[in-house]
Image 1 (tube, one colour):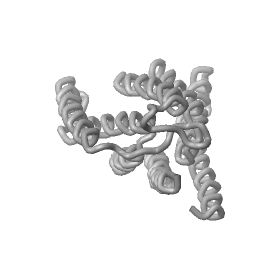
Image 2 (cartoon, helix red, strand yellow):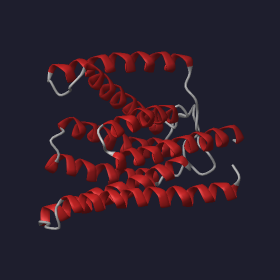
Image 3 (tube, rainbow, N blue to C red):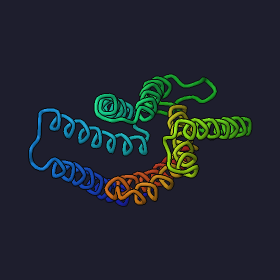
Length: 237
């Protein structure tokens, strides 16, 4: 990729993402009516820092920088704290626990990849694509997991419709697979994130969460950028 174009992208993406996150925090502040308790302030600070470190994480992973995992661990840990103490969505808490574990595993694997995968000159695992057997295996795992999670979601009465249950289950499974593929330095992780982002954007728009929709739009753009960068570097190696 052209270095100048890459630098322009990084600057514009950073400005856009940080602006959206800051605006979201500002609207949250306004929702308190100007009277904030210590708990309210702590909540705003935690979610803001979690958002910023999340943006830094996705930028770094698109550039195959192993520091992405440290920012990812901070971001996921903060979201986990928020969910545990202030969010009624227990399911989201469980997902963040999985993300946290996979971030630690990814940090380890990028430094100690399988011998068949090898390392790049930078000392991290080389990017590779899935084998045919892996594609079949993960397709089956994804399908079965989506069916099970959809059934669980419907049984607990958490959703207004079957479509909602299916959409949430699908995005959850695909996101976890995306994180797992990223930990293994598989190029296909970007396909997963692109799908998750495409699902999430209209979902947040439908419930009026336009700020979150903009965040996911930024993530979608970065997922495309990440795929281009990883694919280019893999072919160049």
